Length: 322
Image (tube, rainbow, N blue to C red; front, side, top):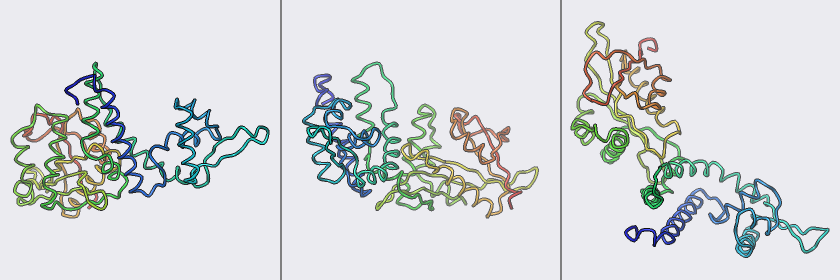
């Protein structure tokens, strides 16, 4: 439909609306939430304001009176709402959340927070042209299942060693990160290392971990790797290198990066390493905050970086923790 421009605006908005309603409903089903996605505006309004009549609900939501009446009748039958007749005026009645409805809205709240995070990422764009913006929004929303992304954020996260079945995801996650921040600075060494982590990391003494989430199928939402380095000539201490830390955009803000980094730190300590090093870029503010929080100190690099984009070298001392 995109090729027909603004003439298909209504159809495209309906397509997007239908898809989002279906995806939200699937999230509710998987999380055993007993409400319909179409009920949410009315439920949220009543949760916020308390008792309202059908007329008041229609006015506040800018919906037609028949549409609200039809929806609230279904919600009463589903035991989500209770209807109270005004003792002073039998013609007037008000609606309020039932005890069952209150419980349902309480249970759905953490799910809504994760859904909000995913959707805000998908509409985080700017454009002077509305149709261009709509195309970008559609591309974001239809790129991967909203259900899977929300469930990834709700499910527990497990850090495991890289297996063959996760190598493709290891490549995709890290390439997506490079494309987003450094699309003009992706080097052959990046592609070679990501395409074959077993040969380029594991077989030379390194370790790769992935963060898994989602049920029942597990999806990779994060990666990190460790490589042993040569001993520092001046001190003879064992040095390890942190690399390829990435977290899927929809899974950020849940502490996944911290868990991955902690896994490497604990591994290096237990393996007898004295120093951990890493390279990053000054433009990656969140990454810098994470490394600072974990006592990585910016220092002058002893060697020239392999990567043009890497303008920050950091070290963390592990010896005191041994």
